[in-house]
Figure 1 (cartoon, rainbow, N blue to C red):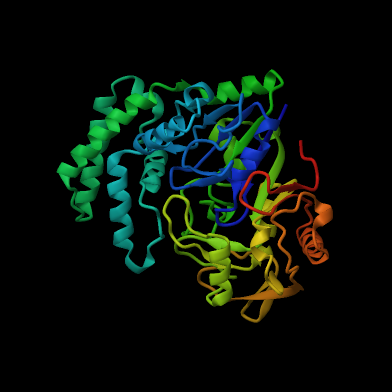
Figure 2 (cartoon, rainbow, N blue to C red):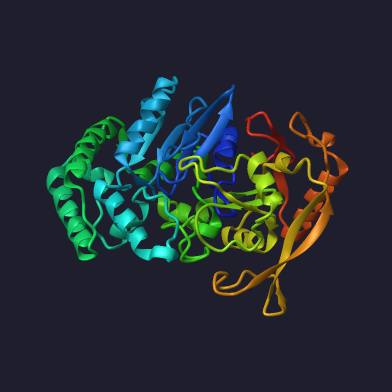
Length: 427
């Protein structure tokens, strides 16, 4: 057996959580491979809305094992809040969730460092959520991090050493820490750690590979999006982890030759949260209309998402990096009322038209080259099959498939799990 990977192809917020929920019945195991609680996956079904931060989106289906992998950074406080809320809604989380011992822990002082570092950047700030993700990954790479497995022995000593180091770093950049507030946060953190230890803490790399050897199927769930990848995204306006398909290998301990299908998710348009370049961003009424119709506000932060037309230059780049085998298009219904739809097929830089994504899109002036297509001006939200799609929407799909050279297997026409049209069976 091989693992299938599901990830975002844009700047995040593509709707990965809904698709994981829809695909989960086809798998035995669902495993999250990177990111932290800054990545919110929103799911809607049976009239209820759920927002997941760190827990895989497969937990609402019955029978599947869900794993938080070693590539994830975990805040015990936020995890406990999220997990308890799910248990109160009827999810038997202790039965279905396992956590890698090698996942790194977000400490209270990581939050302080995150805020201080962002403040020090001034106008050049990245636009982080301030939840300590960046400093946690920094400690991981510099070999100073604490891991979930460290909660099982000598945690007080290990935590104190990390905290004192962080306080020294804050002092070095003239940032002060409210020690009384920190003490209260630490108390809550240690209580949350005890709750965390009540779950099955595992060597997830062994668990997943044993599952594959036994013929079980595994779906790897990514967070954020390809264009936020720390190596290949719009650096430095990126996240702190590898959001591309290769991140599933390092974030779960899966060998490259074990990768099977790669499902790439994108919106019929494009959005971005926080700072950073966004070539197709719309600053006019059209952008505001897309934001309002698509309810484009951060699932965790509530921040307004910047909106624009679909960027096929960036999408082709993301498809190449990830080896995408099937595409999944989300939020098609948001464009139902538009008379015309635009798609960026190339960039014009210094008078030259380019189709390959450039090294740096922040320091150069980019003029998007658009193709204009007729809108379908039809409410698709109640449609049950591809046969019902209006002709202009079918033409939009054909145009995208021709430009991207990958089939669009699934089309989403609304937030509910039932508003999902399968054009090509992928399992």
